[in-house]
Amino acid sequence: MTPWFDYPTFDCSEKHAVVIGAGIAGCQMTWHLSQLGWRVTLVEQAGNISSQASGNLAGVISPKLTAQASESEQFYTDAFTYTTEQLRQLISLGAAIDWHACGLLQLAHNDRELKRWNALKARDFAENFIQLLDKESTAEIAGIVCDYPASYFPKAGFINPASFCQALLANSQHQLIQSTEVTQLRRDTNKQHWEIIGDEQAVIASAEAVVICNGQNLNQFSQSYSIPLSNVLGQTSLAKSSTPHELKCVMGHEGYLTPTYDGVNVFGATYERDYAEISLSTDADQRNFSQLKQYLPEWSETIVSYESGHAAVRPATPDRYPFAGAVPETSQYIKDYTDLKHGRASQRFPKATYHHGLFLLGGLGSRGLTTSGYCAHLLSQLMNNQLTIEQGELLNKLHPARFLIRQIKRGEL
Image 1 (spheres, rainbow, N blue to C red):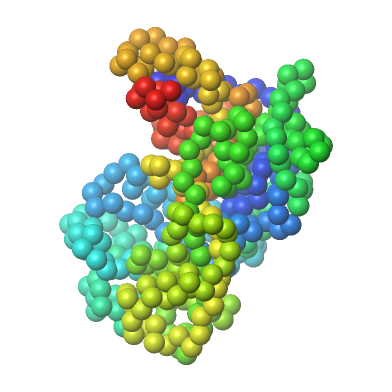
Image 2: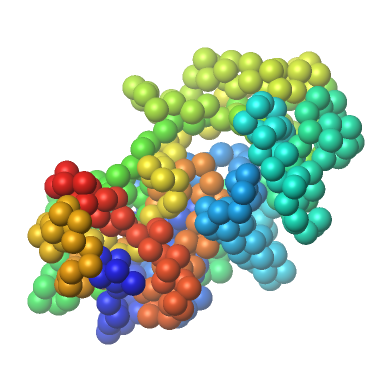
C-alpha cells in the first residue's frame, strides 16, 4: 500500500462512536458498528431520519455494468450483492422493509446504451444476474408496450428508503438525537476524544470515534474541508395510472419508473447542478413527465395525473466512487507529500497522518441505496482493525484523500 493511503491501527478504550447524519449512510454505519459490538450515538439535524437524499417514496437498488469488465463494475456488483443479501437477512429476522425485488429493465434507449447492450450481450453472465433481451421479450417482462431491447436484472428492484433506515436502526444498539445541528467538531487532546458541538457551543455528545455521514454537508467541518463534492439537485414525481397493476418491474432509461407503490408510480429524477434552492417545482415534474413520454410513450398515456414527489441534493464525487475512510490531516499531507509533484513517487515518504478517530462515509450520488451498506461494512471493518488485504485495496479507491493526492501530484497545492 502506498504510504499516503496507509491506515494505522485504530485504538480506542471504549467501542463508542458518534455518527453524524441519519440518512441511509448514517443508518448503515450505525447498524454495521452495532453488529461489531459498538454503541452508537446518532445525531440528526432534521426532526426525522431519512429526510434528505434518502427521503424519496421509492428508490432503486440495482447493479451498474460497464461495456467491458472493469473495477467500477465489480465494485457496484459486489455492493449490489451485499445489499440484497443484507435485505434478505433483515427481512428473515422480521424487519418490516418495503423491498420489492421485482426486477429492473435498463432500456437500450439511445446509441450509448445500445452499444453497451451489444457489448454485454457478447459477455458471459449468469442468467439469474442479467439477461439481454430483445424488445419483444422486454415488453413481455415489463407488462407494457416497450420499443427498446433491455438489460434485465431479475434480482434488482425498488425499496422505500425510510423503511430500510428504520429497520437498520431497529436492529442496532444506538441513541438517536434528532433536531440537532452539528456546527463543529472539537478534539479534546487531554481526554483523547471528540466533542460534537452544536448551537451556542453546546456539547451534544463525545466519543473517541466519529463518523461524518451528513450528505451534502460532509465537508462543512474544518477537518473535512478538502473533500470534494458535486452537489446535484434531484426531484422525483408521483403518477396515478388508469392501469395501476400493468407495470411489473422497474424501468430504467435516463431516469426510472417504478411499479405502483402506495397507490402511485414513482418516476424521475431531475439532475440539476445549478439550483437556487432546494424545493419542489412543477417545472421539474414537467421535465420528468416529458422524459417519460419520450421513452415510454404508450404507458405515459395511461397517467391520469402526476404531482411532485421529493426534492433533495445528491452529493457525488468527481470519479463516482463514494468516500469511505479516515479523514486526512490536509496540511500535513501537503507537507509530507509535496515532492510527488516532482514525480518522485519511488522515494521514501512518511505514513499518512489522519485526524485520529475521525472517519467519513458519503459522496454516494444517486446509488446510495445500493452502495451504502457495502461501504459501511468496509469502513466498520477498518475501525475495528479487521480489514483483509483485499478490503484494504478496495478502500484505496474509496479513500477520502485520493483527490488531495492528485492535486499534490499536479502541483496545485
